[in-house]
Length: 138
Image (cartoon, rainbow, N blue to C red; front, side, top):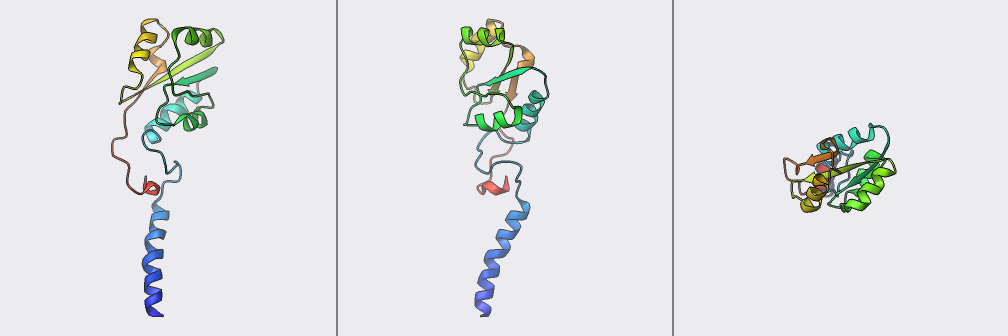
């Protein structure tokens, strides 16, 4: 009986500590972007007035971006005609520029065309520390 209690205690205690230390404000399966800087920048976008659309949201984080901003989010970068059409419809276009330079060439073309304003280009560097192996401890 004592052995059984010791085994149960060895299992329950670490799990209890893990659950107490967990950061439940973020999804445990996020790999790259869902960390405080990402959330802060997207919440700042949400506070801006008007219709918005986010582009170049990589790493499968479109759902999180839509949650934090209340605006549609897309993995791709629109071409010049699509961007002009959206702006004509009253959308403020926001573009994420990550540390991996995802779609950098397309972002550069839109910037040269005058479709990306400095305030609408959000630089999101990778998290300062690698994600822990246990996703609930992030």
